[in-house]
Length: 412
Ligand SMILES: Nc1nc2c(c(=O)[nH]1)N[C@H]1C(S)=C(S)[C@@H](COP(=O)(O)OP(=O)(O)OC[C@H]3O[C@@H](n4cnc5c(N)ncnc54)[C@H](O)[C@@H]3O)O[C@H]1N2
Ligand code: MOO
Image (cartoon, rainbow, N blue to C red):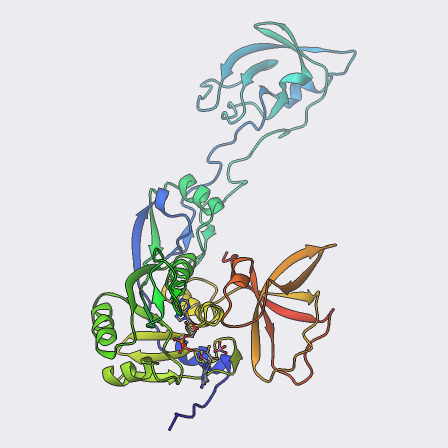
């Protein structure tokens, strides 16, 4: 007798998965390796930026009061008493009608309260310039702390480190950056039909694409993939491999063998380990067979063998667990609204997650499937930049309807 499974909603499945997850703690990495990692601590500015008043232009630092009477027909002559580039400091205090030639980024000399740009001055000789315009108090000065104030929050915990955050970390001297530890996720593929990537095709066989796809999804989500190979549908071999994987990873993903077929071994494997099955059927397409079992603090994700179903199962259920493990400030894919540029007349009572491609048209986000929509198809995955969520309903969807899309490559 084939087991009759009870399907649950996507929301309920996610709730069960997230109720059983762990957090990996923190480690320090060199700033050169911090891009793409998740910041494990909120960072507070321990100094102002800039930490001194500085010049935003190449020009002359002056006292604005000395230009009060300056005009096109009344040039005021200034003595050039110094010349400083960025990194140097003029040690004296500027006096009446004195100017210091100053380059962008250099500290404003004491006594000066304005900078006039080189091109707005007239050079008389090396030591003399004329100024023919009035300058205001504080004109052209980058003030201490105008960028970042000491004591303010620089970046909050849980942010994925982007190049801008890297710039902040360097500005504040973080050679070592506190980041969340990445979970290690074991990947196993099952199925007697599977060939290795470098094998010639044979009648009835296919190359194992899912394992490599999953490993890149793991990496994209900020975790570490560990491959345990592909196995024919032999229960003992699969059990031995799973046992090996369990010893050194945080989570395990298998692909294939979770349905009700004669060679679908995963249910027996969960039984063997006495793992608690959280669910084995979800009200969604593709990926309705997605199964998750819990064993101690490990989750065993049984993703479908069908490539598109496997892909969707990962993004919906594995990615959020990774996000929680690494304490990312957002859990799961980013969601947007988009307008359908095609119709979906097919009724479906299960929620659908269609591989889609969104783009901006006339300032509006529009979306269409990125290829054929069948769970055993692989081609539509290559062009997909989102999943189009069509909640189940009897009358399908029309062109122009607004729908939710989940972004696949924008994890910031
Ligand atoms: N009687 C029923 N049959 C099926 C049901 C069902 O409810 N009752 N569900 C169908 C659905 S929906 C799906 S999805 C599949 C899922 O099956 P499995 O997850 O057990 O996967 P397999 O049977 O092992 O493989 C399915 C399909 O995918 C190919 N495959 C497997 N592994 C890989 C891989 N690593 N790389 C690429 N392709 C792979 C495999 O050859 C099969 O074609 O079950 C339906 N059947
Ligand atoms: O689980 Mo299947 O992917 O619904 O096609």
